[in-house]
Length: 425
Image (cartoon, rainbow, N blue to C red; front, side, top):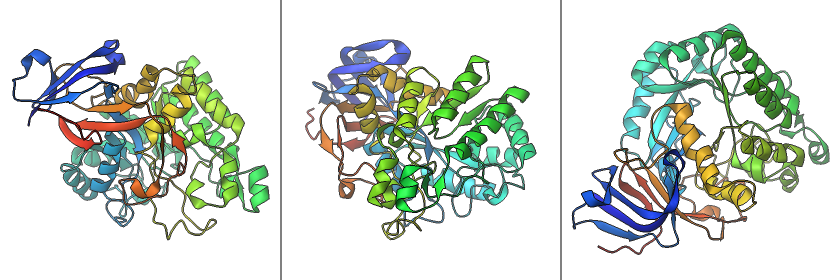
């Protein structure tokens, strides 16, 4: 069935200024006027549901190639669909890294059959080592749509500047993991919790020093930069100040920095360990404030799957947590139910703004555009890791009750996730 009509649904489409009840029509993979549909169509009752543009996640790890026991491109996109995510930016820390045209082409080809659109991030340096530049033009021709060294900073500043210049010429973003490696290396946020746990802490200054460098490069050279997973009040303040001066900077934070703090680490459960680490309540509130005032443009997950065996040892476990399936629900719970942001503003942070940063379309329900859409209902549900759709289950939201639930996801007009179960012809 290539035609679909969602009737009487609450539509939120910030790009077109829509926040009202209406009908949405889809034909041959694109949004159309309801009058363009033939009688032979699938009809969905939208009563009690809200329709928004498909979410765009600017920061995910799909582990493919090389670590497909944790996740692969197809399973990652299946989890994405269950969270309303229809586009994503896949980071280059695969094995091998996405530092060659061959690896990029493999990823592009495999993603053609996925339940979401996967944009590949090319590595800035070979092996993400920080010292030897990749052939960015060749990676671009192979299909990359952004540049990053992902979980590590580009150590050679001259290579970082060169990458920023080349990316600007190609009109693709550079996304920066901001960290001073000489200050980093701890397991959790440095402070009272690291002391209580007796493990090495990672100070907020490690992130802040890295953020300061990237902002300085962007301002001095007049080049754009996107700051990944902001987690500290100091970094947010620096980004805010830079924006006021006209620096071409955008930034993201993640749902776990909005909902959780370092106190969660007292459970000695490695599912709460990520980099940057969970910070203090002061930092958490600063992230919310920075989202509300426009300092932080987007909410991304830093979706990082790991096996239960890897996460079993609290100290030795790798950093990272999954997040695509819970991202909207967690953010909605904190921001919308928390009374600090409208649902329309949340859609801007999770769809409209990421579309602008990425520059690949999406973020609206406009007639003629590919039919990427999420239906959700405001309802409470408790996160059960075993019921999630990806291969790995390392969620920091396990056992928490969230306030919104994704019910259906369309990707290019195709139903890729459906929890409604009640449709009629």
